[in-house]
Each structure stands twice: as C-alpha cells, then as structure tokens.
Length: 404
Image (cartoon, rainbow, N blue to C red):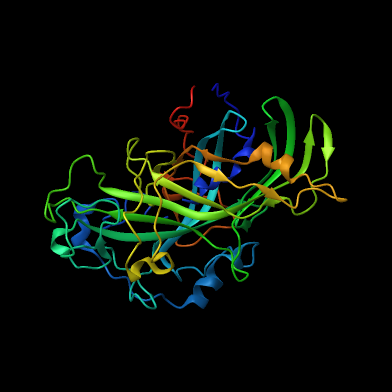
C-alpha cells in the first residue's frame, strides 16, 4: 500500500478524529516537584495541596474573564493544582484513502493534577504515592504469574489523571471550547477524486457541559515489589489519553461540484479515542509531554475491569488493547430526500487508522490565558511557549499484513 504524504490541511476529513492529540500544564521549567509521574523515585515526597482559595477573587483578577470560552472551562484552580495550554502534532494514516496526514499545532487547555483528596468530594491534591498508599492500586495492565489476591504479591502502581479540553483559538481572544478543529480541508475521495469540505470535530456535551478528554497515568515504583521483580521490558508507566468526539462534514465539493450535505451530517455516534504513551519513542507525562500513539501492539490494555474509587466514572471499565482509531459511519447527510450518508461513509469511515502524536510541554499560568493563547510562561532565560508546537512525528506503523 503506497502512502502519499500530505500537508497539514490535506485529507484531515478522512481521519480528523485523530487530531485529538491536542488535548495534552504545571511548572514550565520541568516536572512538578515531588511528582512521581515524572520521577517515580519521588513518590515519598507527596504533598497535600491546601483547599482551593477564594475563587471569586481569582475570577475577578483573571484577564480572560468574560472572553468567549471562559464560562465553558472550569473555574480557575477549582479542579486541579495548575492550569494552562498545550499544543501537539500528529501523523496519521487514513487507510481508506491511503494517505499519510500530518498536522500541527493542535490546541488544548489542560488541568494538571486533578484534585483527588478526599476521594468522595476532592478539594485538594495529594501527589500519588505507593509508599503512603495514596492512589496506590494494583497494576491493571501487568502482573506476575505468581500474583494472588494478596496485595503483597501484586505489582503496585500509583494512579493520577489530568482533564483537558480541546480548544479552537478565536482571533482577538477567547476560544471555542470543545472544538478540536473546524476548518476547510482538502482530501482525496475514493483514492483519486479531489474534494474539499468543512470539517468540524467536537467533544459531545453531557448535560449541556463540554466534556474533557482525560489523561490517565499509572506509574510503577522502581523498587522491587510483589512476588517477583518487574522485568525491564515492562515500561515504568502506562499513559492513556481517552475520550469521545463527533466528526461533522459540511460544504462538500467533489471535483469542483457542490454537494449539499445539510447541517447535521456527522458520525452516527462519537468515535472512541485511545492514545497510549509510545514508550518505544520516549517517555510521556502530562507535564513535559512526549510521544503518544494509537496502533496495533502498542499496549496490551487492562487485564480486567478497573477497580478503585480513584477511577471515578471509569471504575468498572475494561480498557481494550491498543489499535488504530475507528471512524464510525455517517448519518443525516443530504437534503431534499437525498441520502448521501453512504457516500460520505465510503469516503471517510473505516477501522484501525493508526496515529502517532507528540505533545509539547505544559505552558502553565495557573489559568488558561484566553486573552492570548500564544503567551509564553517561564523566565526570559528559560521560556515555555506553545508555538510552533512539537515537530511532526514519523508515520505510524500499518496494521499487520498491510504492505507499504
């Protein structure tokens, strides 16, 4: 299979769901102090953050107050220890149209260190620590064959997570929260016919509220534990970016001929996003960023359902092994009784579209600077800036049995 390489805007309609990599904010000069996500050895340095300060004063002092998107994001310092922006890049293969698609920058607002203490109604953050038994869980992905129900025989892992909201910057300040992308794109229909369309990828709201994507991270202690030492070929952490997005198409032109898709041409249901830390290419953590991917064989998935109150709404889920992103078929495409959904599905839908992404470092302000998302944090000697964004990674591997 020959894979042509297209530019940042070309062909994204066929695999726009993969752009979620944007969704990945603490100290701009390096990992947060005592953060075992970046340094598992520091797990004993867990620090309890005091309850959130007076939020009204924070809102009144925020230069972004009143701008578009401000009311759609969490109140500053209400759910995490720090907040800010991040950009990412991606390289994906749209298998239906046999194209390699690249894009950068992709934007998101991240809330680093989601409050986890106390469990029932968290108002503060405790750095996960298996030494202190805070957010210390049995490893849901890897266990030795000698492990039993006795926790002392199991490999432990500390668990923490970071909500992030896709955002589309608005000229003049503010952002459309929940929009991964909304742009005129160029693509190739059925492998040969040039086409253009307006592509909108968005996070589905629940109860009128925009839902974040979630960065999950399980960090394993370096010290030997359990009934057997952890092998060196098992990574020190498992990172997962997970969420759902709708894909919508409009303003379609095929070979220069307008095709009226109507206002509600989108996937029948949200696409499920699973981007795993790609530890073969380097380490990933939500603070410093790093490589992510969605393709066959990257991660084994969970051995069974998740089982801890720290997982919150994810408790009881079974996480499948890694594979490429599945783009659902489309519905409600066409006007005046013309059902064009099969045409759009043939152009854009399909299973196992592999992707590689790279997230940049957190640009932390303890808020999201909607008045100027391109602002740099840190010191003049060591700034952290969201632009131009990480370099585009190499093309992801194709599914087994598929030629080059």
